[in-house]
Amino acid sequence: MFLTKKHLSRRTVLKGAGVSLALPLLDAMIPAATALAQTAAAPKLRVGFFYIPHGAIQWNTSHGAAMDRWNPSGSGANFKLSEILSPLEEFKHLVTSFSNLENKANQNSVHAIVPSTWLSGTRPDSSAQGASMSTTVDQMIAARIGQETSLPSIEVASELTAQQAACPSGAGCYYSTTLSWRDATSPLPMEFNPRKVFTQLFGEGDTDAERAAVNAQTRSLLDLITDRTAALQKQVGSSDRVLLDQYMTTVREIERRVQMAAQRDLSAITLPEAPIGELESFDEQVKLMFDLIALAYQANLTRVASYIMVAEGTQRTYNHIGVPDAFHPLSHHANKMDSLVKLVRIQKYHVERFAGFVKKLAQTPDGDGSLLDHSLFMYGSNMSNSDKHNNYPLPNILVGGANGQLKGGQQVELPEHTPLTNLLLTVLNKAGLDMKSFVDSTGEIAGV
Image 1 (cartoon, helix red, strand yellow):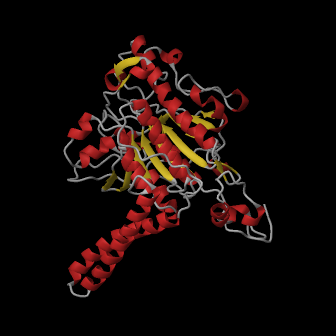
Image 2 (tube, one colour):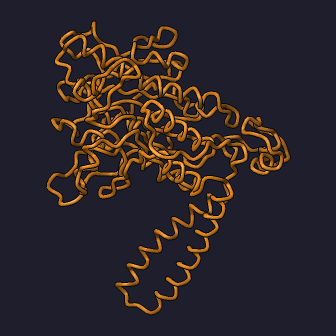
Image 3 (cartoon, rainbow, N blue to C red):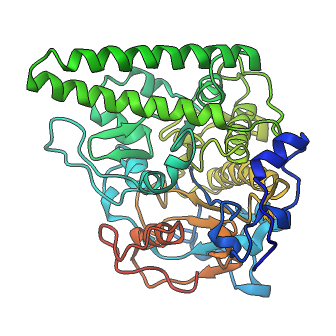
């Protein structure tokens, strides 16, 4: 695609005209004789990982295939979503499901390491004194594209369970409470307070004026820290200089984020009021976290997000959908039909909330398409049959257009016991990392 000889800054046009992101991609925004994919106007990929605990009801209960409520069938025009996935019907042409996935990293672990091994494919080193695992896929992608936004990634959750709140500090707590690891020793906590997430995205303060004032104060403080640290480095020994260098690395990252925040153009974004804190309504809490992620994508504040939609081992009840039972005890269904039906209702509810988020992105213009066209999402669980705490087959789907990189509209039948890391490798490569292998992968999944 080659366009005009004129070249206008898209940021300038948006800000100067005071219009919304619905503004179409104009010829004048593209440099002369330049392909769209080679310009700043090229669509930016958004990536998200959305986790549900306790697996899904598939063919591996005592009721067999007749009770499978997760796996779709067919492909193309014959692609038919299952009961649990049916809320995504409007977008089934952008849905890809996979059979026979297995993650050996969480084998026989009950709940203890299931979340952290979903995006790592690596079993933690239990002999290590501290945290010891590996970088997760979301953070590998964030390392590649995260410097283009004020926040390399965001990590959120819908709740903090009583067990998590009571968990003493240490690596063991993180294995069951986070999806994301920056490196082998750096777990990233999932933020469950919507106000803190809002502040992380848009800054401290309830109004634009308050946020601008805090931002200016932060810049002044960082300038002071930089000047004084530079002077101090001339007065201390070599070992202290190493410590100060490490300290300044953190300061420079904060400076980068502040500078990116100052450059962002939020004129097209209608910000809600800053949330007070965690909401009493779990349903509203789940939706609010999705809304905040959608805003972050739309404003290009981050392009990578991970979200634990409900905590591992949760005692959460679902009265709002007619299920008064706590999720975790109910997940030990003992093949009782009444329990299985209730679990299907819970699992379908979470897909409904995810589908609402997907629809919002589909309705949000982004360049020559929508945010959904330019997104790649992985939704699923790292557990299979919750009554057995097993890890095969794992229920996972990909959703989105991924800038034309994702085929969609199909159920991919894989060989038995295909490593989950094959799917993770596929995601990495569609995000542009061009990797040959990942942990115990045996290859990228073809035809996706």
